[in-house]
Image 1 (tube, rainbow, N blue to C red):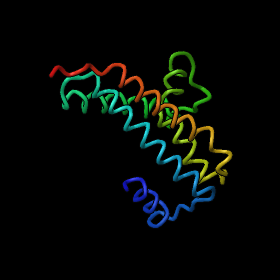
Image 2 (cartoon, rainbow, N blue to C red):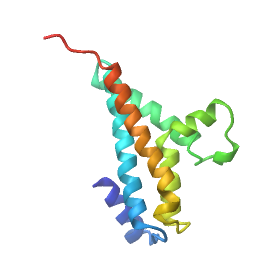
Image 3 (cartoon, rainbow, N blue to C red):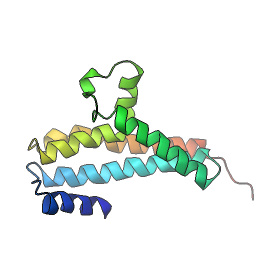
Image 4 (cartoon, rainbow, N blue to C red):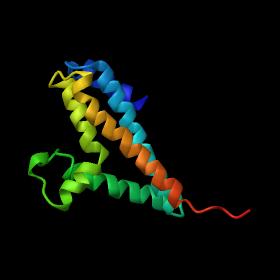
Length: 138
């Protein structure tokens, strides 16, 4: 719902037309929400308190969002460990989808690889959360 509200605001309020595939933007948004939620589940499986999860999520998503998504620096300029962080950070992949749909008039086929990476990131994080989750004793 929040994603749709943001898209409606971008189009209605700011007049930013969706030049590319509407379906790709929707699929990318859903895949991004899935990957982001899976990250929260992963953090919840290894941390004990909700406060710790919220703090870790804020820190572990804000710093990469600014530094490794290509927002401040071009993604092609990122090297070393930063390149790995960029590759596993969902925001970087969703930025490709949103720019492709809004600005670059990309089709679903053009954006499918980034959407697929978002889905795979979500699945890997859920699998890791399942493995790392400690069983509760009855």
